[in-house]
Image 1 (cartoon, rainbow, N blue to C red):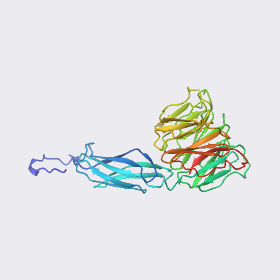
Image 2 (cartoon, rainbow, N blue to C red):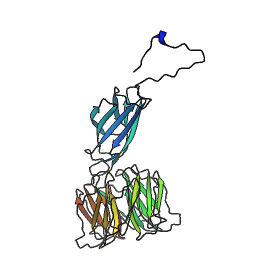
Image 3 (tube, one colour):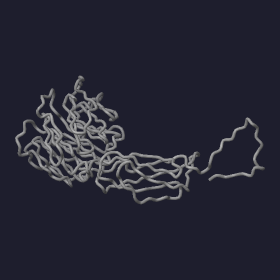
Image 4 (cartoon, one colour):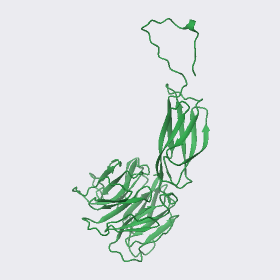
Length: 376
């Protein structure tokens, strides 16, 4: 609010005096926060947006109005002006995965923004419940997912050990045990360790939310970051009881977990530690892991298909009590975290929760064993 004074009451000033005026109550800053900052791109999940409007003295401006917008395709509802300088909105997910910027703009044009990440969901345009399997020769098998290429007919220096998909079904990366990276579809090549001497072999990889980078992890827990993937730490200089066998990233890319074959879990960045099987007697070794959509938990899977759920990861079933033709080698979850798939080295698929069975190579003769899978 602008306040005027009578001219007679104002002090006399000389030519060298200066005035500094602060317009009390005028919006100078808009701060936007999202809770959570990552949701599945399933068309139904929601996040709460909060905008706090303050003036130059950091006092809240109760009289301001706010306009919400996005550079993506989420929708807004439940718009509330609380009359105390705070404004809230309910954001409903679209069916397109990836990051988008949520912006709150005040009447005078001052604005603030925050990034919402929509993770690939089995109900999103970046995934209809399909998946890819990859064999150690780089052969890729697609089920309700587009085929973008493979290294099945290429002579590799070292075997393929893992696969990771881009935010949509448009591409994927394969990684070899020497850290060689092979990009297909819309997956960009951001670098590799193929020409470096490694202390230990690469055993897995994970990608950033927007597909602009990826991490590789070695069996000693050494982590190698490429593109926009940030290095958050490693166990490369720590003596481990058992080797690292896989990794999973936070949905917003702010951290990651490493898992060892005894189920020991190592959390870095903003990734929370929710428990492990490091102190338990396991029937079979752990071979992989997957994180929940909001990063509030994770599943570990053993080679007999035993599942161990931690944090907000729900147990949906396992093959721990089944006789398998071949051992389980990996897992992947659905976009909303309501289910997961396990894959065996013969390409057999075991679906739990809301994870649909789309096919397998369990009845096929493979040139090389399957070593991993990724949800499309």
